[in-house]
Length: 312
Image (cartoon, rainbow, N blue to C red):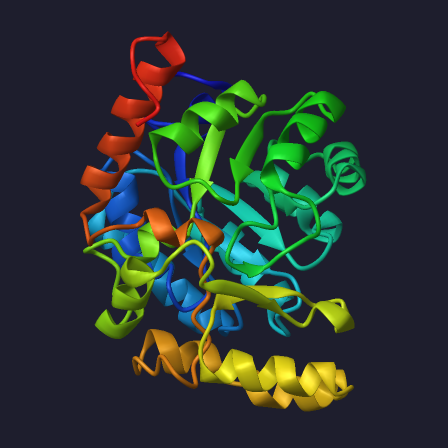
């Protein structure tokens, strides 16, 4: 399937893997790219040397295009931005800030720049700054979220800009794929379903929590302080929300979550760790390979778009 996004990134299918911190490491990114999608390494809060190593290891596993997600609040964001240029990644996605100051260097190096946006205003700003495409991410997604749903955000962003739009948030199968395209997207980005992929190095406990999740098992912490995060409900979220409701400061609440994502991803602590996952977790029924995930999405999604398939 050809779209402006597949042409931009040099990929077979318009399916992109989200750059999730601690989750999107080189095994997963390479597997997604090998399957015809676009794998993305998640820099998260890591240092520049670690990111460089991830890029090089990913390249050992695939000669297909892959990208790098940079959280712009990372203290080493400037260094990581240079690493992206030096290592020649195909594309950079960005979050938690404005990538404007890096745009010229990335564009000069031939890197495709694809900011993640949660509003029409930010989408327009990024287009003016020179972005090649945008990820319009609705609040159904796992991790840090905005305030608008995917179903409302994607068509408004698609109407507001001329560059391609990639839909994210609440997409896990062919139905979500087809819906995103009907809303004006030219590709989809998935996070939660790829967390449970067989190539994902996430701890088995974390994967099983996602597979066992129901539609109501995620909740949002940090809403009152303007830093909302969607994750699966556990002991940590219950304590966090209790303190948040009691008026705890942002600093106090931040102390609660320091290292909590690593606890879940690496150590398998499903009680005290942060289990970032979207509302779509209830559709993730089993552990599958990245190739199986992409094949399922494309086959059913294309059937629906052609009018030949059924929604179930």
